[in-house]
Image 1 (cartoon, rainbow, N blue to C red):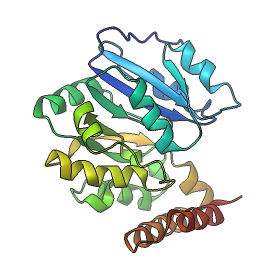
Image 2 (tube, helix red, strand yellow):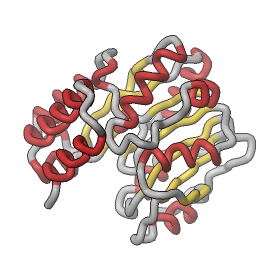
Image 3 (cartoon, rainbow, N blue to C red):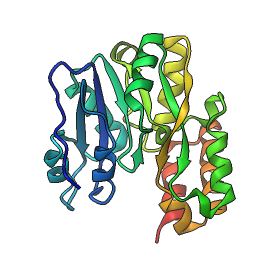
Image 4 (tube, rainbow, N blue to C red):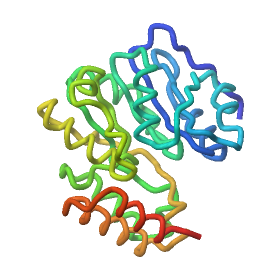
Amino acid sequence: MKALQFIALNSWCSIIIPTLNEAEHLPITLGALPIKGFEIIVVDGGSTDGTPAIARSFGAKVVTSPAGRARQLNAGARAATGDWFYFLHADTQPPPNLSLHLRTAAHNGFPCCFSIRFDRENESRWLRLYGRMSKLSISTFRFGDQSLFVSRKHFLDCGGYRENYLLMEGHELARRIRKTAGGFRVLDDSVTTSSRRYLQHGVVFTQLVFVLIVMLYYAGVPQQKLVQIYVRSFSD
């Protein structure tokens, strides 16, 4: 795949992507992004598989940060020049008309995200169901895989990502942004995210683990305990 050169000059929106050994997925994601008017920032947490070099080959700005998605996303926001931020996971591809969606959302002024679909959802009706559930306008279903579009002002007003959150950081931020911005919307399109963890560990088992983590999070269980459950559930 021929690398595209992103144009950082006069960028109204900064697309911020955290990475840690994402050499397999990052070229696909970068190749799906719009160019004109966008600044692309890849925030690497210490990859050993050549991820930063791949990002540079696409013309993206590479920022280094201690590992941890919340830390990396905040580092990307600090390095960003756009008035709007779009936070995107490295294994998640935006819809083809991303630029139109984001410009329309910026005009409306509300922070927003997309619903999700899984790249191999044809292999499981459960994956298709989980994707449909993400379309619901209920804060419980807001997660980082759905990406996040927010103005610089709203992001700074709510204090950015909580860096002590190792899990649920996107969910927690979306809840705060909804309050400080006076609203939050789910756009009428979907990002496509990887099914790798679901298919590796079992679709129903993986979703049950995520449901358990969400329930414990709302019950006030500390992050350290949530991480222990996550690691034990998905250790090879």
